Amino acid sequence: MRRLLLLCVLAGMTFTAMAADTGPAAVKAALERMAPGVEVTHLEKAPIPGFYQALVGGRMVYVSADGTWIIDGQLYNARKRSNLTEDSMRVVRREALASVPDSKRIIFAPPHPKYTITVFTDLDCAYCRAFHHHIKQFNADGIAVDYLFWPRSGIKSFPSGKPTPSYLKAVSVWCSKDRKAAFTAAKNGKSIPSRQCKNPVADEFRLGESIGVDGTPTIIAADGSVIGGYVTPPQLLHILEKKQADKAAAASGG
Image (cartoon, rainbow, N blue to C red; front, side, top):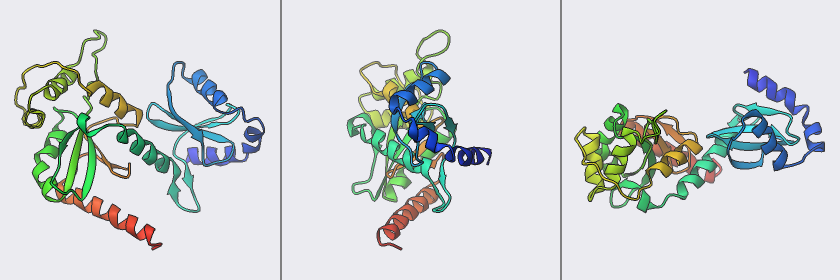
């Protein structure tokens, strides 16, 4: 609520920002002052006049065009009762995931899927394993599951700088002759022979971080919305069916 009140106060000041709009350079400079070395991965004008929205570390923040004000929080349209931050993040996630070809995913899919989800996963997390335990039922329900690796312990250990065990296990699965079989075996707690090859694991981990993934499993629907963590097959099917129905209703003006 305090963030919403702050937003209302700043909205009254947007004329100042609009008059001194120096564009993306001022926004990046402001963010650099607040967090030296910060990487801005997405930048465009915000839905509120006089502000830009910037994606920083997987979070959307709002910066006045003159670089004076920074708001870290959710932006809502009170009249439409919509979350504009989440609307923007859905687009960001869709575009980011579209950049990952099927050749860099581990895919479990029925012949003619009705729905497709992307799941950032770790091979050892309990809920990730529980989710994959239902993979046959997900597929039977017409749901294709595209897995991307997101080792929970990161890529390198601190302070040694050596690769983490979870990262090495993901690489070993990817480098296996039969990736899907190795993936399922690892999910079942079986030992996987250590292997090395060219792999997308680190890139997928960083991609997840850039769109706000901070835990596993993170399930993302085709529209870019985050479904959440562990769900059962009936729960997931219900969520996807509702999304499809809502989309159809919106398209028909209902």
